[in-house]
Image 1 (cartoon, rainbow, N blue to C red):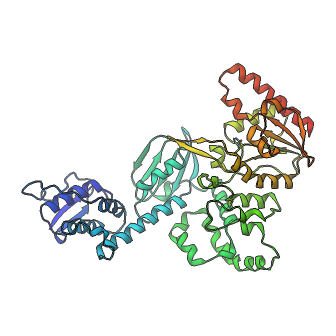
Image 2 (cartoon, protein in one colour):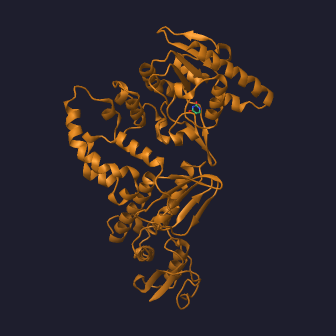
Length: 475
Ligand code: URA
């Protein structure tokens, strides 16, 4: 028996070096053993195998791809299976294509399990907000079915590129500081922070996307396997919601027409599907907010964290419409909480406008962006996306019935007035639409943030505050 000692359960390079040496030396699979050591340097027990000459060989790409997935499987004998395949490839170079072969089939099954674990990790990691000396730090505890942390962490770096976060798992930790990924030793659950308000968000989100008429416990358990429940804040709702499902389903069936909340939510929706919302009429802002979370009226939902609805009361007399949520709003689920929102807040205070008294929303409810390095760069929504999302804005207008709408910038102007606007020439004056709605147009606060020189910024800011005051007088 020949033994190779690997440095850790994911030591692919160590395995490859050892497997290559074994194969060149003619060590049969039954005689090869791979164990994970505890930090020693030597790869081979009792010295390495000796070979006559370095008779090079190349493993097919299909095998290497499979082996990289397989090594993440938790089974003890995964290294043996990998070596058996490598050994057999010598006489059967096309082995990996023989799907009926028991070794190949076994490898395919385990590979599928690993990919599924990675998929579940992407879906079920839940960050909690913490604070350290450098500011906000998001931390998640997760127990993956297989050792997929290293291969899945880059997904989170792309997805939450501007945040500082750490994922703790029993296999190791991944930390992203906004530019660099570091992997550390295994963690335990006690290192994860306790509950915060994000938990409440996940519970609300899950309750709103739960459709009792579609409840299929078996399918649900397979989509959200029980092993993940203990770390999912929203899973606490499952017994309650499933118990209530029959009652809710009966109630839904007996209703004369489909209700918005039930129809808005679809388990597997296509990229764009307007028909599903076309005939629905949200009765409250809460209905509408739930509907936005399931919206497929344009493809922007796909790359956003969540839909961001308006904030404020239904009785507000002034509705302020921005363009679309930015990076911060997309993560927080609230409009105008990032830099443009801070500028807007300050200008509103200066103008004497109370943010709590108005209804603040956006023309487009999902964050449109493109990745640029570690950042998610804002992209202006196009006319088609604005038009698709007007469906929600029009319902907000119907429900809130504001005395005045203040449109911030060209996108808001397009959405509210239904035509292209020239912001600088049309700003500051109340325009009355055919249906009687009064609209006042001004610049978007990001325009002020982008101005390069201080003098222009001061001047434009004063004009912006002037327009906000005009809105107060017009209400
Ligand atoms: N810009 C907007 O138009 N809306 C927001 O919510 C944030 C930034």
